[in-house]
Amino acid sequence: MFPEYDVIVVGAGHAGCEAAVAAANMGSRVLLVTMNMQTIAQMSCNPAMGGVAKGQIVREIDALGGYSGIVTDHTMLQFRMLNLSKGPAMWSPRAQSDRMLFAAKWREMLEANPLIDFWQDMVKSLIVKGDQVKGVVTSMGLEITSKSVVLTNGTFLNGIIHIGEKQLGGGRAGEKASSGITEQLVELGFHAGRMKTGTPPRVDGRSLDYSRMEVQPGDENPSRFSFTETPKLEKQLPCHITYTSPEVHDLLRTGFDRSPMFSGRIRGLGPRYCPSIEDKIDRFADKDRHQLFVEPEGWNTCEIYVNGFSSSLPEDVQYKALRKVAGFENVKMFRPGYAIEYDFFPPTQLRLNLETQLIHGLFFAGQINGTTGYEEAASQGLMAGINAHQYIHDLEPFILKRSDAYIGVLIDDLVNKGTDEPYRMFTSRAEFRILLRQDNADLRLTPLAKDLGMHHLESRMERVKDKNEAISAISKVFRDESIAPEEINPYLESVDSAPIRQKMKLYTILLRPGVDIPAMRKYVSWLDVLLSPYDEEQLVSSEIHMKYEGYILKEKEMVDKMERLESIRIKPDFDYKILNALSHEARQNSPR
Image 1 (cartoon, helix red, strand yellow):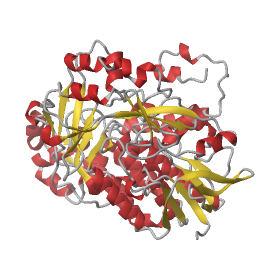
Image 2 (tube, rainbow, N blue to C red):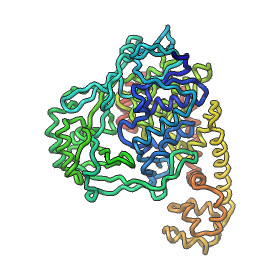
Image 3 (cartoon, one colour):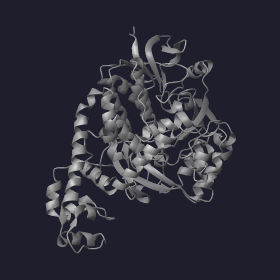
């Protein structure tokens, strides 16, 4: 019934989808196994992609030939570039997505690849011979053979949903949990643990009073995630912001005695940086209010995601508390929030190519490795798919260093440090973040992907070549051309910068705080003409390169130094807790 596949991917969430297309685009024959064909690429939690550091990851996925950025660009409702008031290393793209269109676009792109087959079933065990994986066994009793397997089970491994005192078996609301794999892997010698995550209630947008909330519009000139010519976002839906209050907090506290989190029924640790609303009011009792983001789920639905109100309290407590939030006085709830507890495997059991140390040809990606977030999962799926292909063809593993990409930081952290709580990426985790900006992901990574044999990236390489040439040409304009005081002083005065008294190079002017290329073009017509052949992306990258050239060079020197120091071993009994310069989290997670 089935041929022998090169790669079997178990699970069709964000990690599974990227793993499947990565392996297939390199020429491997792939089978994508999912328990439900209708929930491929489902956005289980918030309907958004990107954010601080996560946006950089999506751009890196795109630069490496993945599809998350393309799908997001085709299906977003709103785009915002976060942290524009900070340096460009902190700029992070974020998009609000149409949940249903997002999943539909992903499935369309998967089905367009002739090397990807699909099978709807639950994988209950692996076929293992000696220390080699040889395929999977499904709940129907079917044995499907393959040369490698990528497990991307998300929150489905022995998943339990908690709502107050109720416990339901499931990997997601309305979907059953997966069993069998954890037990087999433990028998094979793997260590397993439990983690917890949660989601907020979904409500009826028709029942909300938006006049009592703050409007959060998208960017006036929205950008995109993909470095390809994806559609430009012409219209956007606004999000809104509202707040909890002491009255809301008091109502939530009435359910604490029935909370699975406080009663100890949940054994797994939850995400440190995305706590439930009950956790927030318990841990930050001095805060009178907490911010809530009211996010639309799509163009053609009234369903609303209440970001910031994640909860596992009883549904009646959630409902009563929500009705005391400004704008939610008459709210109708579609479904309550819940916590979900699931199995994961500490990622220190992996190699840097995401292959397990115990079983050759078996790869883990996504929440099975202890991460949280679509973006972290998708990037691991991409790398696991690439490396599954490399493995079956006896090719060198594809491993990104910490200085190459946020994806390299993520995997290095997981494999070498491990995690006992859901791992989330932040810009602070990347020591070389000036080099790992969102604007230059294509320049850093597309050539690496092309060298792997991803032939669908031919046109992207042309764009990379054009962009590099444009950056050099724009820089030459600014270093060669001088400008007279009467031409530039009106602009300088408009940004409270000191006027010049004699001709000066454009480059020197650009280095001043508050000065930028788009504004200079409006004041200097001949400069506008000189720069007209270049698009916005090329101009932005060129400006960053010129303004931060010294910092970039310094960071490259640091990379060289760190690579020389990497071979130096630290004594096993070294006490990291005495290093106050380390974050509290880093000291907690130190080896000792």
